Structure formats: structure tokens, C-alpha cells
Image (tube, rainbow over all chains, first blue to last red; front, side, top):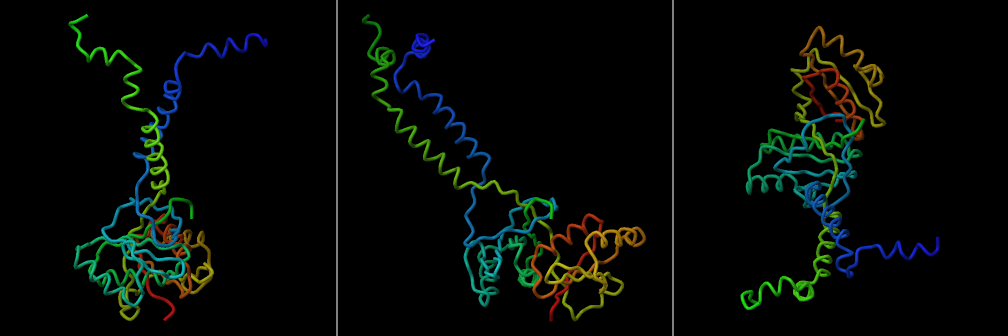
Amino acid sequence: MRARMPSLHRRRPPGNGDERILPLINVVFLLLIFFMLAGRLAASDPFEVEPPASASDGPAADGELELLIGPDGELALDGMVIERKGLDEAIALRLAEAPAVKARIKADSGAAAVDVLDMLERLNAAGIEELLLVTRAGAS
Amino acid sequence: MPASGPHPALASDPARRRSLVGLTPLIDVVFILLVFFMLASSFADWRTIRLKPPVPTAGGGGLAGAMLIEVDADGGLRLSGVPTTLEEIGARIEPLLGRRPDLRVVVKPAADTPLQPVVSLLDRLNAAGVTDMTFIHGGD
């Protein structure tokens, strides 16, 4: 038995280091292509937001405008943290730059529901007609 | 062989070709790209719910004959003032919807209610087939 082991090792195709790591490179390329195609590149949120779980199956539509509501009521418009006082101005400014009729609200599951409703009202008053609440797939 | 110029000689000489393009830098770059895409891409399964903005509490004219569901801060539900559960609401609403398909349901979260119980209630109402669902502001 012991005599056969070296001969097993020697059966490997002769080649230098480069040729022996080709299978590794193939796998790495495949992984790279998988992550490039399957993943979605998105800017990370300025604070942690965990949307509520819901059985709804609405499409993950990308609204033209995104309002983030954190667990403690922090606000961010299109990834920029804003103060509560300046919200209406910020929305008006944003809409003046690029008009939008569709907005996405990504609120934390622990955010106050009344607060979220208040934001719905404000966005609607600013002229946005389609309001989408982002949820996480899963049984609620 | 004088007919074959320098090019076939280059291509058939593996040692010379390897010295032109090293494999190691390529693998380095591919690894870096792989790590980048693994860290930067997100696989979160987002969905959305379409929401109508809340109606002002003062103009309650359209709320006559509607069903009122209140959501407390601890997630407790009250149907027309009577404490109830999510299952009971579904069981109560489904026969009503059979008689009045346009039944209007009004959801009123209390001041400190988190978003999750409200979204769970919306899911249940959706599953029961409610088409006319409105929010009103609570707490004030």
C-alpha cells in the first residue's frame, strides 16, 4: 500500500504551477459571473432599516423617489439624511430637480405607523400619486 | 523552415508566451472583482404594497357605514371598539364582503403603534378581499 501512494501522486498531469491552478481560476470566474448577474448593486442606506414582513406580492418596483424612515423616526430622502423640519422643502426641491409621480417608502418595522402615514400625506401633498411601501417577503 | 516567419515560432513556444502575459495578476484582479461583487450586491427580496394616503380626520363624511379597526401600540386590535384578533377580523369580514363587496374598512393606528402589526393587518384584509381600505390618523 505504501509503495502505491507515490505512484498515485505521480499520475497527475505533468505541468507547472500555472496549469495546475486553471480549474481554480475557472471556478472563480464562474463565481464572479454569478455574483455580477444575480446580485443587485444598490447604494447602502445611511442607517439600518428593516422593512416589515408581509405576504404581499407587489413588484419590487423602483420608485423614482425613495424616503427612508428609521426605527427612531430618522428620515432620509434618496439616501441623504434630512431633518424632520426641512422635509417638505427637501421634497419640493427634489421634485423641482426631477419630477416624480411614484415614491417608495422604506420604513423600519418598528417605526411608528402614524409617522409613516404622516409621510404618506406629505408626499401626496407634494404631488406624488403613487405611494409604495417596501416590505420584506415572509409570513407576517 | 524559412517560409514560417517569427509569428508561428512565438505561438508554438509556450515558455515565451507565458512570459508575455502573466497569469497571476489576472487572478488577483479577478479575485478582487469577485470580493467586490460579493460584498456590494444584495440579494434581499423586497416587495411593495400600494398605499392610499390617509384621509383627514375632520372630513369624515365618506366614512359612514365603514368598518373601523383600531391598532393599539402593543399590536392589539379592536374592531368597532371591541378587542379582537387577526383571525376573528378575517372571519367577520369575509361574510360581510359577500353581501357588500365595496365595504370600506378604516384602519386607525394608535400614536405609538409600530408599523409591523399594521402591515400584518393589511395582509389579512387583502387576503379577505377588501378593496376599499383607508387609513385615518389616530392619537390626535
